[in-house]
Length: 242
Image (tube, rainbow, N blue to C red; front, side, top):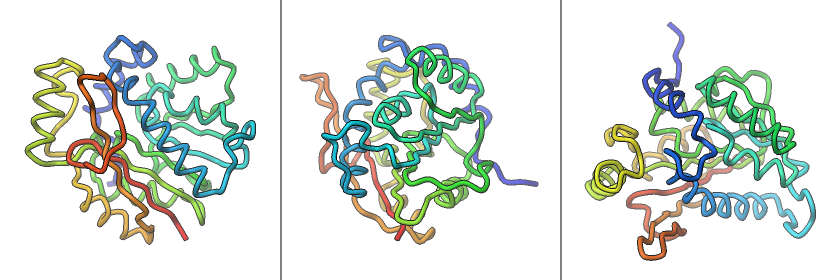
């Protein structure tokens, strides 16, 4: 039996919501609020790693980028605008169709594929994004292995997810799903959250070098997300391949 990273229940869950990806007031509204801070972080880290000049138009034009679990393309599009050759893959066909339609509307050249990372063959990328997807997959080790195999030498790969501790249960499950109703109830399974050190241990087995881990925290007064040194709930981490 072939191993697969996709969890069919998770795929169906997001397929059923696919039409709302680009609605800032819909079911993905928390992601729209979260997107600017992760986008800014990614652009900063990638440009620093490859010594790119962000003042130059299409400064990412020499980079190939893969967004794994791309959803409706919320991260694919800004990187395509920066000139990167972007490929977005997702286990949900509905998500891919929504992403394709939106890219056409915005005249962006993005390759969208209804595939899992282990199904991508004979191709490697300079940048790989695995943002808010690892907590929805089956077999975390195999997922990380499959993603890491697609990274070019001197490439950079990012994982963003939610820590697993009492605080993350209170904030990401009870608060976000049951109290504030930011997310549909059942969006996340706390048992599938990954601690930062677990992430580092998993990824390091793929001969990748941990660069940093940054927390992302929400300020309810400002209604805004920002980078922090507190990874106790949401965090982003990056690794490079020498």
